[in-house]
Length: 145
Figure 1 (cartoon, rainbow, N blue to C red):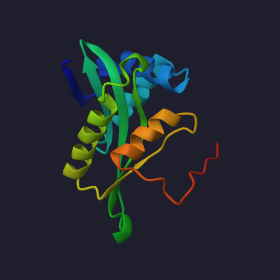
Figure 2: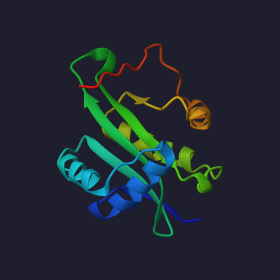
Figure 3: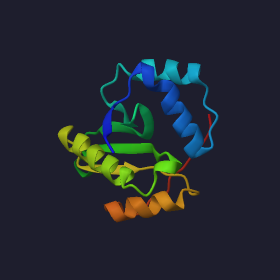
């Protein structure tokens, strides 16, 4: 199995959207995703990582690097939309992807990674805990505006 992790490119948007729509029960439209991707592409702190196997995107994650002025969180990363195609799970792809993400974050000077995950993704949570993530003492609050 020759799995390659790399930053997503414009040509990858359809496969990336299809995977995330499948994993997160979303209905993101390709044109909207492409527009947002092109806007974020200019910001080096926004990274869409994909795992490609036989020209198919089978894994993905969004990494956002957040620099701050505070010692306790000088620079950290928020991970979201971390997913592996359902038929490819149980092959340690998620673990491999998290290792790649950790290397990227360390190379960018991050001192921690925070991972946002939906409550219904119980199996994914087990993977994150096994990788060394701990459930933080804070809640993730949400408000539509």
